[in-house]
Image 1 (cartoon, rainbow, N blue to C red):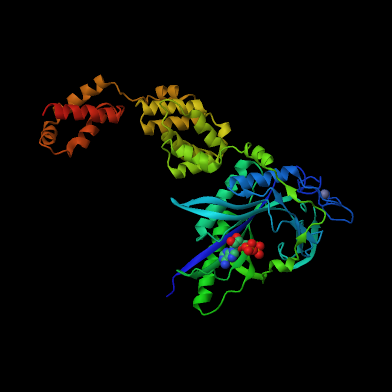
Image 2 (cartoon, rainbow, N blue to C red):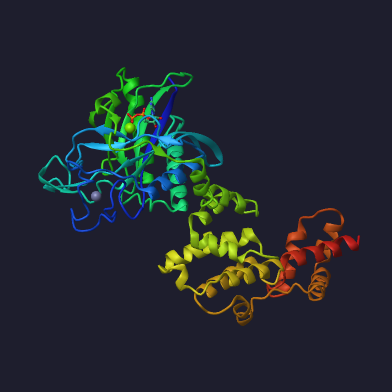
Length: 485
Ligand code: ADP
Ligand code: MG
Ligand code: ZN
């Protein structure tokens, strides 16, 4: 039996959320009445001339810089020629040689295993219009009786991010896609909504025998629109290709379609080669200049990227998985950052936020902002646990009450009589009483058998109605059992 290795390269389209389209001043909110946001430029009527959108160029440069790309000071626009009903120009303005950004990297992590995915290029292009297929086919073209076209989306700035074939599993592909989405969101250049199509993926997949260095024939599964679908589509495609090869067949280089309901990819068409598009430089557009000075200016607007923010949180003693959840939510990470301070246990607060608080919000179907919780509350509660005034289980009870809007942690703990005794005097008395009642346990500890120690801790806690700080109980007990040796 051959052992197989999967090879995956992803192409990701990201619609930029600029106010106007890529080469004209039409608005980009394409949810409007169909065909109301179109002009001669986005329809390429004779004599209309495109003018590049400066904000869109700044947006692609931001993405390129975040992906550690080289930014070309001069890049070129090309026409990619093909006929499709949703493409009113019969060509798409795109880039070919000399894209805006090249040679980048993106680090991904799957269960603590890091991989560097090479970024081949990040280029600027424009989106197509939208077709709606009307008929009995449930929106599919095959059984449609007619098709409606809306060109409002045609010409919306679209960035394409192309990776090297560096990805080796469906999980890695998903991790790459999720990280790219986080980066784009944190840069504020796109709303990156997968379900709305403002971010979408094409997955190139091939397999080869382990040890083989030549690439196998690939298929390209188009327009996958969720992270889960991406992972499923790639897994399916890997398994399918291995099966075909093991049965003695060969892989056809083709474009495939992912069907969410059947959980399978199906063949759409034989894949076109770049020669098919008759690329030529757009005679209406000059080379695009992105000077070093402009790059610096754009770079200075980039705030800490998600990876950097995660590292800063991990350095506070928080585990990676929790740090990911925190950074993915501006609200949670904002509260976390504001709560930190002297005596506030970062890890505990992070776990409360990503565990108890998130569960509370889900359970009660409420927004964080409509609960009573503030960063000040978290800080106070954190300090109470840190100082031993509150046990960690009592703290959770207080946290829920704070979320319910019952008041601040101090008063809730007080009202509910949850405060722990960490006053050594009271604990010493209890320890003495317990030791007097358990002479045999004490004897065993003295002779070096530590087994009864836990039992004694339990007895002291019980003696104090469960309200002693266990760590103080342990240390007093330790002192007293060794002292008397
Ligand atoms: P196209 O635009 O025609 O799809 P590209 O050559 O730009 O072509 O490749 C697109 C993507 O396919 C890239 O992400 C690349 O890494 C990936 N790719 C190319 N060859 C393979 C292969 N044999 N197996 C898996 N991915 C591949
Ligand atoms: Mg492609
Ligand atoms: Zn227009």
